[in-house]
Amino acid sequence: MITAGIDIGAKSIKVVVLKDGQVAAKAIDLGGFDQKGTTDRLFKKAVAEAGATEAEVKYVVATGAGKDEFLSATDKVTEVTADARGAHMVHPKSRTVISIGAEEGRAIKCDEQGKVVDFAINEKCAAGAGAFTEAMARALELKVEDLGPLSLKSDNAVPMNAQCAVFAESEVVSLVHAGTSKQDISRAIHDAIASRISSMARRISIENDVLLIGGVAKNPGFVASLKRDLATDVFVPTDPEFISALGAAHIAHDRAVAKGGA
Amino acid sequence: MVEYWRWKEYRWTSPDIDWKTAKIISCGIDVGSVSTQAVIMTDGQLYAYSNMRTGSNSPDSARNGLDWALKETDIKQENIHFIVATGYGRVNIPFANKAITEIACHARGANFMYGPTVRTVLDMGGQDCKAIRCDDKGKVTAFLMNDKCAAGTGRGMEVFADLLQVHIEEVGDLSLQVDKEPPPVSSTCVVFAKSEASALLRKGVPKNEVLAAYCSAMSHRVFSLLERLGVEKDFVITGGISKNTGIVKRLEKEMGLTPLTPRYDPQIAGGVGAALFAKSLVEKQRAGA
Image (cartoon, rainbow over all chains, first blue to last red; front, top):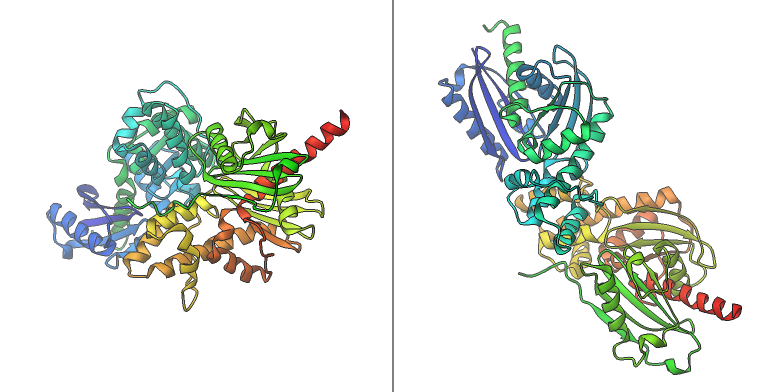
């Protein structure tokens, strides 16, 4: 049986196709100007890669900020539900799931079945989302992928006063003028966003294991800062940006089974 | 590359005052996060001022501001009896005699510039927004401020000027050229508002409407700050954003209250307040001596 999960994020779109509950294909692309068009194209591509036809897809669950854009979805679930389920599938011992996307940060507390117990969301302010590191990378004239590895070379904690991403950009420029090294500034950037994320996570109280998912989890500099700030170990699955889509795909599988479509 | 955010720097000297006859020459320097004003007063009268972009460090910005204010006058720095620094960079100015908070300076400056009937001052600066209540002497009785978030500040407006490629000084007028007020931009965060505006532009919404949507959102945000503080008449707006008609007109409508018309450049209120504090401090010194 073929089922699929699709996560339409603020910046990128992720599709996971399951064959009898096992991952058969994954696809990711930037939403771009035509989010709807990209979503349709990406979905077709992933289904083809799984060696299936669209007609064979029994159930599709959409999630993410743009979930209403995908009209072919059978159903929709909230990002929090999808995150928790995906996290449970890849790391069943997860009790705290921290999910950081381009424009949103979430902290979710879940039980041993992957059910959501409590959660906190920041969707109002770029200071606690991937958009923050992107803006800072621009100010430093670095690629965002290079920011993380560079910050790991720093053993000097430089404080950042600004919370707002717009103000922090000016502060980064001032730090550059003052002769602070790019590696120290990179670390300051990750420390700043990590402190925002951990204060959000502490609102729901942190319980081990902590699993970090979403695109920002691929930034090793941020992971190091978050570990320091939370003073606990943080697990990062492979392909952390697909976990929400994976969760949606498993929910789709369950619902298809429940409908008797085995 | 055109820098749409870049506003014109300027200076001014009073043609009517002979500073040599003055008993007290005082100076106020307001080193803000975005702009710096240096104000020279002779016996409590406005004599000269400059308004410049703040550079990467406060002492240099203060120095450049003062030098420029004094240029075209033959006042030397040693002729000045007292210098008060204020604003974001105030504690880091080696040649100032004293530092005083910008809240106190703005209230005192507004009292001088608009008269003793002023009770509420809204100062909309580069990286913060302050709502201040004061008495008939220009003394602060209460205040609220946002200095954490770029929404509702001049810096946020600069980001939009750059995005839409409209000169910052033209943003306000252009935003008023709409037949019908569009719904305000829904994101508070400037970074997110920028994505929202880009999406509107892609859909073919014209620039003036996008600017109207942003100015309207900014006006709501500032209004909620004023509401929390409580507004008493007379009301005035100071700081760079007070020159943006798109914000002022919308705020006026939302408040149902017209701010007093400035007789002086509303951006120098902090510097004027600081120069007045400097004058009082000289008087105190002389009385004590």
